[in-house]
Amino acid sequence: MVNISPRKKVARTQLKSERDQREEQIQAALLAVDQGRFKSLRAAAEHHHVPYKTLYNRKQGKKSRSEAFQDLQILSPGTEDVLVQHIRKQADFGFPVTPKELRQLAEQLLRQQTNNNDAQLGLNWVSAFKQRHPGLRGYYSRIMDVQRVLAGDPAVVEAYFDLLEQTIAEYNIVPQNIYNMDETGFLIGQSQARSIIIPKEDGKRRRFRSHPGTRETITVIECIGARGTPPLPMVIYRGKNHIQGWYRDHLEAKDWTFATSPNGWTDNDLGLEWLKDCFNKHTQQKAQGNYRLLILDGHGSHVTLEFIQQAWDFRIICLCLPPHATHLLQPLNVSIFGPLQNAFTAEVDKFAGANLSIGKKDFLKMYVKARRVITGSAATKAFKDVGIDTVINREKVLRHMPAWHRDSTPPSSAPQPEDTPTPSTSEEAKKLMAQLLSTLHQRQEEEQASLAYSHRQQRMWTKKFEKFVDRLFNQQVIDQARIQELTAAHANKRNALPGDMNRLSQARVLHQSDLPRLIAQQEEQARKEAEKLACKARGKQRAKSMQGKRQATGQEQASVALTGPNGSARVSRIR
Image (cartoon, rainbow, N blue to C red; front, side):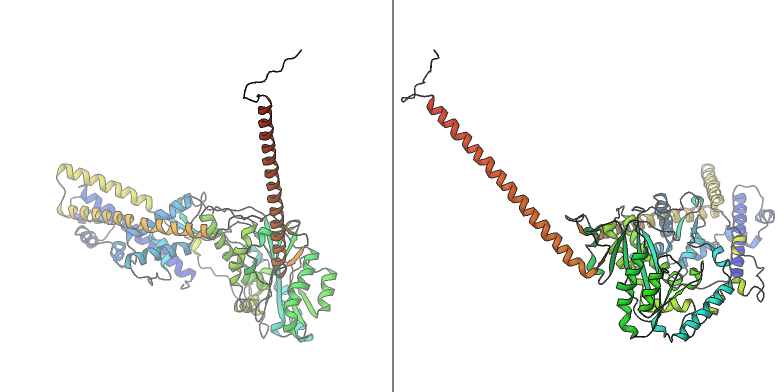
């Protein structure tokens, strides 16, 4: 998307405001002439402060600027009206549409209309769409407060880079042996703040998205390297035991490590286990005996004496980031965790849109897909974004800190886009349309409508009919797309299976290679228990059958004893 400076944005906003105001004046003048309130067009033009020639051309049927450009739109006005209604409906249901989803749906409509599966919209189509429909507005909830950036101290950052350069030089550390680790938490089924498009008048009331899961946390310890494939993660579940249902999709998480903790967070023991079983195991051979640099934050589980000592024994140098500066200096925070959370949220939203619940058994499958954003090239870029490359580039970070160049660069006095409120003219347009329809009915009853007015009436109702046809066609396309989305979500949803709640192990840490053996043992044990129960049930059935036979035999013998040789009844008298 083309970047536009703040001044140009303000200028465009002001120009659009002036055009909208001028169009309102022209429509008011035309309405006044049609109602007979002025004797001539010139008098109406002077009264409403519009050019006479413009008013004359409009009276003769010339289109307005916005109407003239409608033929150049890639989607018809009727199609865009269907999209607007879809946005409003999704906002009502608590699933507001994101710009990406809007583009995908619009391109699907375009391909349906043109029978061209390669048809695409322009880069700025979403922005232009919102400008054409002032009743919609985009919102975005920022994850990080900008005040945290402004609070950064350049002196602290300078000192960190001095220490970084000194450490790299002292231990002769090459870029392929520089790593960064940190943990990130995921709320099961919990979405996050995303860019959405909703009706403008409902901005405060509907600025939310429904989510299908609980608020239970699963922690993942991730690590990336400045060069090459990143080490594999450790997934930490909340609980005391590993449950079989959590690992139905473990084959997609090959060589991962899994752990449990009482609250689903990392602790000192798990941090040490990660250092031994995850990091050192996957990077030791690549280092070939050279020192490795591990950049980490000041979390308690990362800076224990045992952790630092074990790292030193592995020839790993731990460099702790300055407090409250991870958003500036930590590669994972700057460039990885954002796309990772977005990818995971996209997987969650697939279930949310289909009203499907999410539990621990679904996390692994979703996270494996989301983690595809962590590639070697993405990791290399993340380190470059924080100034760590073949040559340390501290200006890469410092130039984003206003306090660093406050004296050399004066603050801009240009007005920002937020200083100029966006005009809202949709309600005024509705009132003008209502007045126009009222005048039309009066003229029809009085049979005094002029020929020019009849042409305007014909164009108006023709447009309404075209929009009606577009709505009928495009609404079917949207409904079909929604059905396909729900079908795909239900197909990907893994239902509960027998044995999902079986306890695999009480060990705190498990490796993915241990899971097939443990699952096989559980399945074998479950099979034996099932056979035992079946054998017990068959024994009960045989005992019940034998008891029935004995009762039947006893009844027959009693019947023979009560009859004589010739079948006559025998009667015993009691004396």
